[in-house]
Length: 285
Image (cartoon, one colour):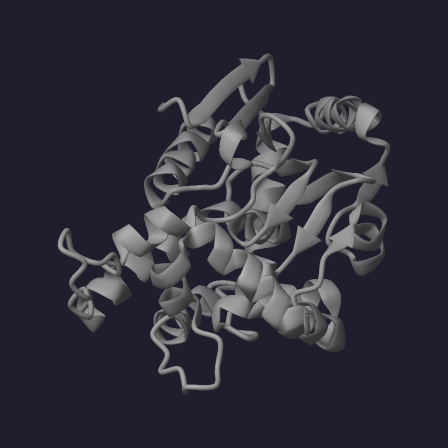
């Protein structure tokens, strides 16, 4: 694995560790590809019964690394500052289909996956928490669908799962407003199973992992397969086919003159200031 994604094995427990703490574990597209490869490696390891997904440092995952996303989508200006040529729909759909497959890999993992969440959890990080089997969070964790403020406004990869998890009204609220909420609220909303003091988080996750590992290997895999069949009856697979097309459309918008355009603002003032202006715009400040 790369330095950005670490794999640990401890008896029946495997750990996938996002390891860009200086970036709050923001994922580059290649990091997510490697994370899924590592997931498959642990799925294939008969010694592993349960998988923990976590992030090194202060945060779980702050989402996609936006600078990498802009580069991957061909949205960066040329060396001379020339406006980039608009990417083809073919290239955009291909990239987004791969992203959708990566998210789907976590919802359809062959073994139970527990997310261990501290600090910032938004965007791609929050998607992973929504898709895995179980999640425990620190009381001080900070969740949000702030990525929706980039022009998605309720357009995500896995709406079926979000509707089932939160209920229709709550799902629309979280996606349309993009407001931040903490660990206790995440437990109340049904996003995480438990919210605990941060200094007890790792011990709580390890306890659950050890208890799950008491099950027979075949029982865990069979139970996971039955869970997947139930998800499919509720549109579990179909949502990702819709999701990647929706993401391509939602990140390829025409903005009117009076609307906040993150890409335009980023080209003028840089990524950090553009994010600050985005938050000011959507909070009415």
